[in-house]
Image 1 (cartoon, rainbow, N blue to C red):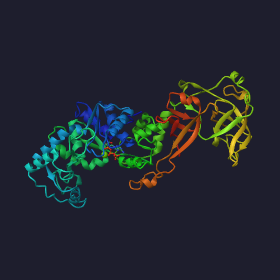
Image 2: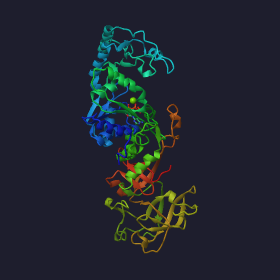
Image 3: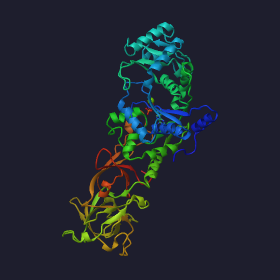
Length: 549
Ligand code: ATP
Ligand code: MG
């Protein structure tokens, strides 16, 4: 399923192997920041980083990029581990950037000693202003020429807790006139008196991403540091730090395009707002593009991996259609999910000629139970009994008093087959006080039993149904798109929320679905549904049977 063809990164790795550049094997890392849940965009990066070492041999680290204690938590660490494992990948090593805080600090000291870093006492605002623009060079900090001794003293006192947040930062001394703004004396350490989720109160200064990432990559001897295109402009800084650090390993950074998906947002910042502002029920709300949300919707891990393989790895930014993900989900569930019957909007059918309508069930006991295969093309899924009695539920939309032409389902005086059961004919429509259809009085043809039909009747349609006495009331949640537009804007996304993204049905399911060990089902003619793992009696719609919304 995966490894469909090759991509520019795999080609590069293959040629590096051939030229003897990674003799110890390929080493990659997936480096999430534990500041939220993973989304399907991360899955692309996970499938790439773990995928190449599966393909070429080697090891992949799961490394938490945890340099900002204010936004990170152990709950996110645990959720991310769960998601990566659920996708079916095994990390060779689990590490944290914070495991390397000592080495990072030593590297900073070494840069100060080389005259390549200095303590700057401008505040954040002043630093931003002096950075210049794309067309204008920045201006030097008045603290740029501090002596090495002064810098060492100040930095050590920063580390020892002698200053308040924001009083000083450590900056690299590169070039305030560089055309690449990332090279204009970037800040590499800031003071934060905050408890860190992994190292507690051991530190009150924290290294910045651009400084941390490349050094961690070098320490772990990552042979190919794969990241998304927004880091392309940071590559000169990545290389600068490693060129000046006391390390003898220098991984190449290679960028690929981010995954974008229609009708959703994919940045943790925006996903946080959906959760925090209660627009969704949580990170694992089935409408979320998070791995946890997709899992709760019933999307199999293999469908996500297949999707990532199909979109491939390129340098072109692209927004992928939701239909492709849906296609992969269907493909995965098509032959494996048992097919049962559930009625989402029940309409009562009373069989007026059912033999034991008034009496006890003497005659019923003589009729063998109806059965149906769990999957008409997959015998291995077995059969189940289908309770049948005088009162049944059918789908309200399977009956029409004024049907359009070519209607194949039930109408007054019309006939239809009940799937795996009998043919019925509708004799009478019973209305409620408001004139709505309350119930259908029908007759069934005893000699029309599926598999043993001697009736000679030829109804055009087959509909699903559930026995009213045996059926189990369930809640079905049909999730639509979370947004009304294909590309919600980062600033306007809250206005683009689809107010109708959740439809709840008081449905009825055949009892065998409830006791079956499977979690993913096809409800015949309705789509694929998933037993909610948290709430009993709730089914989440995973995907419809066919393309189209
Ligand atoms: P977000 O903006 O959603 O917070 P991020 O890039 O800040 O994403 P990280 O936790 O830092 O999130 O990302 C971990 C890895 O996943 C990085 O290597 C990043 O490049 C990659 N990644 C994140 N989003 C995507 C995406 N949409 N497509 C492909 N890779 C992604
Ligand atoms: Mg990030």
